[in-house]
Length: 481
Ligand SMILES: [Zn+2]
Image (cartoon, rainbow, N blue to C red):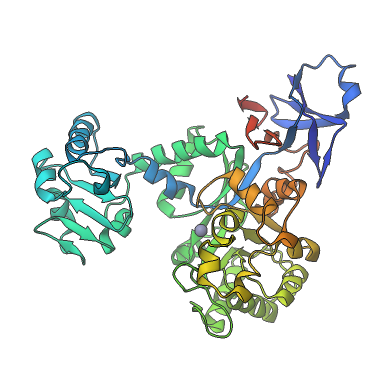
């Protein structure tokens, strides 16, 4: 069955057009034609029309996420809402009775909200259960309380007071290391996070993730439950295993692919470890180490995704890259790219290095009074995320959320309401970077991401004002709207 989608505007190429409608083949899951609006009245194809102010764009592509990891937290109940210790303990008791799990982890308690008793220790949790491990983490993430069974499992951990069961820093911050989620929890988490992504119109992602998550993605794909298109990037510690196993970029299919390895070149602004000239922050690799990694990955046909936030890390990547290569067929990419030197912007374009940027960081961190303007001297913060310059230089860049948070509206607003006015993008440009531009990163620009015949019918209609999705379509199937 064919279907015509008629929105007020359509993103064709990089332009919003007004006079066209899109013909979709629902069975094939592909776009079959773009025709002028008046022609649609001459066909017998059913038309789905959208109101004034609607924009039809290719499905959004989140080019840098940690969806599976994020999902694992969704599978753990949040207990922030409780306003007394007794309520919290009742909830935990009830939950344990109903749900069969190896370990019970509850997130988000806040004793400041509690009426009456404000302490929580091992004793109260032991009263709920002595033979099922229970961990309750505070809303800040830096403190958790364990019952005796949980303490027995983790043994001696720095910052854990066995007497009270209260653990600070190490254990609460690395909960998923000490208590890895089960396969079932990861699966449940990915499915929930997938719903959240699709409901916003995100139809493709690159998940920078762990092998245990990759396994669950494969299971979901085998069972036909994967509706997002997922491109997997693993971390540096898996490079050896990936090479030995013989994986190369573009391995997989239109639903689930693998492209390469993520490496870190610096830290973050918040932690004071993003690398700036002359000596602010720190580079996590020497030039030689980076050279070795880039060479090895290239020899083995693996794409490198290099985390580089500060100008010194970005500069290091470009220097080392340029000393090795004159072109970039593997599309080795830079992640974040928040403070490039002006002269490096043109060089990035010339070397053909694609860049994944996070405009939600612009929205949350770059405005007056927000973290970047507080932590960084204004000569640096005033160069934050220069999208207009990148646009002019012709860099191949696309939006990604880094799951902090996964929020399409926030990403678009981050770009079009950029605090540095000359760097703002238009709505048209922001929509292009949120939808079309990402397919290039996973070598899929001929398969998806454009409204053109032959491309996957992954489409979103949004309202121009509210940015709210009015329809989400994947493979020609309407999931919402
Ligand atoms: Zn990330």
